[in-house]
Image 1 (cartoon, helix red, strand yellow):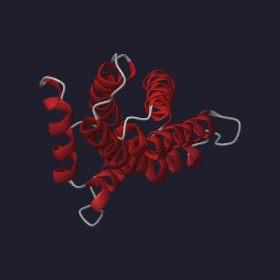
Image 2 (cartoon, rainbow, N blue to C red):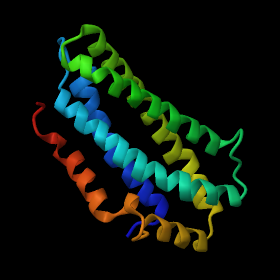
Image 3 (cartoon, rainbow, N blue to C red):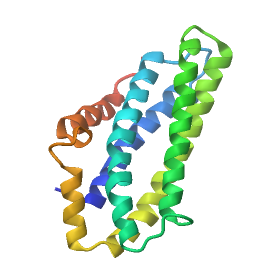
Length: 183
């Protein structure tokens, strides 16, 4: 089993697969329609896996542990990561709000869905890079073995529905299956 930092990086690889599919199927797609079924599935994935599962582990476990070890929140990397989580949530809201009219064929709504999807992709890709190459390296340097054990316990708490293995497997399966042809 990977350590908690490696687990978070593994989550990133899963998220990146869905970002890539979103880019190909929505942002870079031509024409006046969007694959609404895929967009709905992607929205569920980003809400449930990226936010409720992955960001939850960061916001409720990793970030507070790093703060206790002296990594500043305000004006530091943790505050920036939290801000970027909010930017991502706002972009997803933009997609969600415009999707019904986009499904009806509104060119303005289709364009808004594409614009918000592009914004989300850019925010998340930059965010993932910063976490993988800066914040998570800081975590490895600052966290003790005991901290890592505590994070692992929190990441796999059987009483927490946000971190259940079946939830993770469902969304990993979704990401793996994106190799199938676009709808």
